[in-house]
Length: 328
Ligand code: NAD
Ligand code: UDP
Image (cartoon, rainbow, N blue to C red; front, side, top):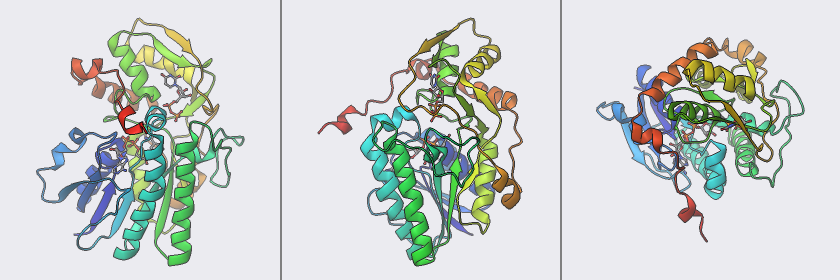
């Protein structure tokens, strides 16, 4: 049985990856320090012999006994709210955490896939974004802690590939959504759906003319799986090119949820990218991959998930209190 280590296993994407690898017949080791994740995302796996969970912070030395065939490094705060609240941890997990996992991969002769992001393109001046575009990132802005951690992550991964001959893969993930997103993580889909469910107005930032392109989680996981199994070393965009303005998107959510609330406007956060759309030519050519799930279908499934949450979870709009960890 092939063995895979998945970091960030209790998070949104990590938990779906665990499910996928279990389904493919792998022995899965999930690792997480639960800073933004939740054990309820993987509790259904605890009864399986094929699954193990290590509660561990990957910025500290990572030890896994025995052999390992694959590592998928998905541990990192991923929503703007989270990485603004825990900026140092975000930088550390991208830098020190990635270094530890590359070292582990080298030791175990395992193939490693690193979760990068469309944020490496920053507020892009090239549209749609191809993998060749170097990006437009404000290193010292509030999003810099995430963007630069991810850019460093890509650099050190390529260095381990070139210098040590390590088998590496880099996926640049564009906005992905689906069941198990945290309702209060501040990302636009849980934000709008939570507001609709609580009977609050939908908060559009700026004038809502900024765009995003949303990919359903099942499509994203399929793309990541194919990339891991491919022999392609350079970064690959995996996302859905179907682009929409945030204002139009808010209107879609109003229709989908049937809420009688309206849109209200709030200031646009600093350095919020004005456009974002993946060019997925490479993924199509190299992996034979393209997204299959239409937004209407994916959003319905996601809304159905949020509807199952308890009233208590729904009301928990306060973001986790990270302040004590941030104090000097
Ligand atoms: P998430 O917050 O749901 O999951 C991240 C997980 O990593 C959490 O369970 C958290 O507890 C864990 N974690 C964080 N720091 C850790 C540490 N030091 N040690 C161990 N575990 C740690 O976020 P997600 O949306 O599932 O994102 C997963 C990965 O995918 C991240 O690397 C993120 O940058 C990347 N990504 C996601 C998206 C998206 O749209 N979801 C887009 C681009 C990139
Ligand atoms: N956004 C919004 N209202 C919200 C949350 C987000 O208008 O309540 C906007 C945000 O400004 C951005 C887009 O939605 O332009 C996507 O934001 P998200 O935080 O999901 O992720 P990003 O793509 O910015 O990393």
